[in-house]
Length: 282
Length: 327
Image 1 (cartoon, chains in turn blue, purple):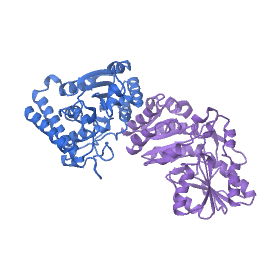
Image 2 (image 1 turned 90 degrees about the vertical axis):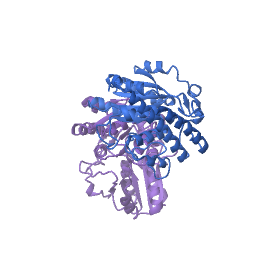
Image 3 (image 1 turned 180 degrees about the vertical axis):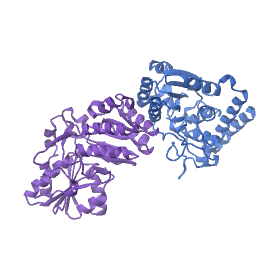
Image 4 (image 1 turned 90 degrees about the horizontal axis):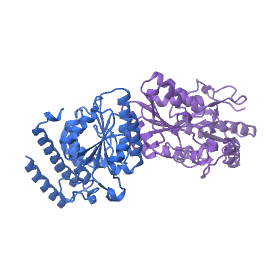
């Protein structure tokens, strides 16, 4: 798909889907009374872009061998992945009510054995990117058509394993697109206070990766850079600048919202804002 | 005279003329043979291809050999990713590093995810020798045995390592196999049965004790049985190369006949084979037990035989333990 052919209506649809995903997310978190808020809100646009425009896969046949694979390394953002997967048709939306509850397929951190469509069980940071590298290695060696994508968080660069994996990706010029959720927060503070990462772009460039930067809330940019990455002979790593808590004024850019769900009152307030935005988008 | 189990087709003269063979060589060559038959076999190595003998695979199938460098966390993760593409990766390193250094990756990327990775822990045990304590894996059985969805195998000679390698490639799921650096006395043959989850009773009909061993301690157990026989003490010997899953039936049957059970392993006495047997017997058939292994201490540099002597891993130690406990 060429961006030039990308119609205004498509963008509008993706924006609506993303905002709707945020609404469903807040409802889901409020029901489960457990789960992360900030990261998932910030990643709604990235996940919608991936599931609705980038990944070549069939939600009704999640085990199809020819599918593109999305590895999620920062498993704690799974509530937004679940929401967008349900929007895309992987499972009925009502199942979201079971998030983090007993006997649910929607585990607190994603479990591939429980939920078809989840490519990797994830939680301990740094593990998803290594698995994405292994899968991309097979794609390259066996000249397969599938594309491998991986979402990682910025705080994941605190983990040594992330760097091990990036060295490996660069060495092998893996057919792999890595999307970094650069939201500048982690569980106990701002990333630059807890463990400074800047200059992140320069560090990644020094590894000989192809580094791109996008506004992580701009669907057009995300899709266009991902499309270009497919033609790139090198591994592409995209720094997606996102606002944690995006769409909910009192959560935006507040690390305190990294790991907790809204209570009833907070959820009501958040939903008011998100419904207002939905009305504006229509 | 000690009578060996005829159904196991053991080597006829392995006690009179002991021949030693390299277990890691056997693994490396078998991996090449498997790679020839099955294009889905991959080898992943953490900068230790020569020591683990994954180098044979690298030389034969460079396109299916994956070098991750000195990075064991990524080693396990990359292997899991390869498995997710329906391949059969053998992840090769030293046991102290893998699973020693990437246990979390083994746990989540491997076992919890239901992947199909064959984890090879080479240079396991005190026999690493001169490299000293940092490189002597004495805890790997404890940390692997505890993981769901993971088989734990400890071959006792080169031929058994070969069969275990083949069995792992066939089994769809996570497996861990550990072996040492030194050559082991070869006592089994092509015809000796091997199955994941099965124990082999090498010497049957013990009256006074049963020795359950794994790895290179199996040969020590056999020698101990010979010495004890001369002293009028009759023991049976089990090669328990499948530490997990445990062959409960065989172990319960064989230990039923004796008042004393001794375990022998090149590992800490806590958490490994001895603990597995104690967990079983204490619940289903309580027996007096003795544990031969490293006694809650780290190893050190030295020749393998010196270390076995100092840390109590010889046939003599097994004999003394049994004599003491049967007094």
